[in-house]
Every structure is written in structure tokens, then in C-alpha cells.
Image 1 (cartoon, protein in one colour):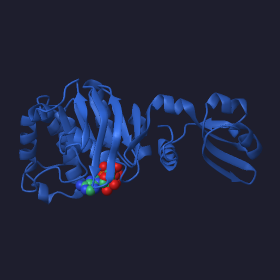
Image 2 (cartoon, rainbow, N blue to C red; image 1 turned 45 degrees about the vertical axis):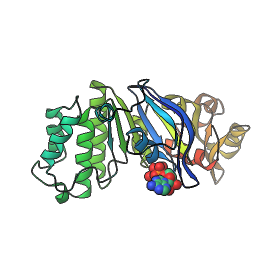
Image 3 (cartoon, helix red, strand yellow; image 1 turned 90 degrees about the vertical axis):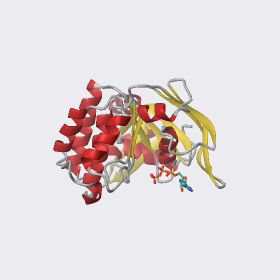
Length: 286
Ligand SMILES: Nc1ncnc2c1ncn2[C@@H]1O[C@H](COP(=O)(O)OP(=O)(O)OP(=O)(O)O)[C@@H](O)[C@H]1O
């Protein structure tokens, strides 16, 4: 489902959490929604999923204004960082309730996911550890197969192997059942390879929206003798530069071909570094 965001704002008092942003998300793509604390990511995801109203502007889903709550509920699954489920419910009841909401719900996939994450269906939500509660959120988010699935830092408390398994399961299921997935995270380098497109917010503005492959092609990490690195960097937008004992390492906008012409070693720039750089330069790449 295509999502069009038109001149969307959310104001709290005098402060804009989102400041007249416009952008579009294509259907069946995995988006990374990135930005520093307070950038407006959660605000956007909450408006998209109908949890809060915008101050002005609109979001259209598949060309329509999603006024109808039923339509929204069926189309969008938002899994937040915490408190996704009533504490008194048992896991099996959580799954039952969500299976009613989502027409594409896959019962056997949900059961497989419970086993995968060692979740016992008769346990109450209040008895779960943080990581187990996150795993339940992920189970619901994936089994919903909602055309728009939104994960807002969904893995709090999960250990690294469980998170890795989650990313693998998401990609496997997405291959078989493509949908629009919006993923907000601070663990950027852990998941950046999964993103097909990256959107970076800063202080309520979109400072970058770019195809991940294009980003990878347009930026380069170089290393070599300081003199050569300096020559290569002439006239380029430098993301980061470190020098030690006659050698330098730099992240910059440029291609690996150019870097190799200078006789430098070239690799991809970690998306996390790019995000830090772009959100330091206020208003850059608007
Ligand atoms: N209910 C609220 N009342 C007042 N201000 C709010 C409210 N919700 C969000 N804000 C403010 O709006 C701005 C954007 O917050 P938001 O939670 O969307 O950011 P975020 O990018 O999700 O941050 P984080 O990465 O820390 O989760 C922040 O300045 C925040 O303080």
C-alpha cells in the first residue's frame, strides 16, 4: 500500500514534533526510519497508525484518507517499544484477539514464531521478561502480515542472537509475502542491510530520503597515506576524517571507483555514520 504524507505537522505547545513534512512511501518496500532522539519518528508512526491526530496536513493510504478506523486497523500493524498488550492477557489470547483484527493473519506462522522465541502460550503478559514481551510483539507484527507493518524499536530486552533471528525471519517472510515495512531503530548498523530505502528525520524535518543502494554507491570509506587521502577529499563533502602516523581514514561522498583511481582502499560507509553526519548538519540534503 502506497503511503503519501502531505504537509504533515504535529505541534506540542509551540514545538513542532513534525514540521510540514511531505514524502511518499512505495508499497512493498522495507524502510529504515532513522534520526536522533526526539526527531519525530514515533510521532510519525503514531499518526500513520491512527494513534494520534496530526495538527495539520494529511496521510493518504492507497490514495484514500483512512478515516475509517476498521480499514486502518486491518491495514496497519504498529509494534511499539513496549506496552503493546494488556498485562492480564495470556499469550494465546493476545494472538486470538489480533488474529480477528488482521485478515492476513497466519495462525501456523504465529505458532512457529512462539516456538522460535520459546514463548509458552498459557503465560500471561505480566509474567514475561522484557525480551519475551518484545518477542511477542514481533510475533504479532510478523504474523499479522499487515500491508503496512511498523516496528518502532521493537526488540527492547532481546539479546543479540534473538534480534538476529528476528531480522532473518522478517526477511524470509517478506520475500514470500511482500508488504510495506517501516522500521525505526537506533541499532542502525545491525539492520541497515535490510533497508531498501532510508528516511532520516531531524527536528521534525526529513533531511534525507534515499535508496540504500544509491547511498552505498554515492558514499565511500577510504584509507591510505594521508597525502593521497587529502588529495581525494579535495572538493568533496567529508563525513569523517581520522589521521594517525601518516595514514588517514575518511568517510566521504564519492565513489569507490574514484578512490581506487587515487590508489586508496575503498569500502562502504556504515549507515550509522551517515546518519550522525547528516543530523549534525542542520538542514543538509533537505
Ligand atoms: N505527548 C507529547 N507531549 C509533548 N511533547 C511530545 C509528546 N510526544 C512527543 N513530543 C515531543 O515531540 C518531539 C518528537 O518526539 P518523538 O517521540 O516523535 O521522537 P523520536 O524520533 O521517536 O525519538 P526517540 O528516538 O527518542 O524515540 C520531541 O521533542 C518530543 O519531546
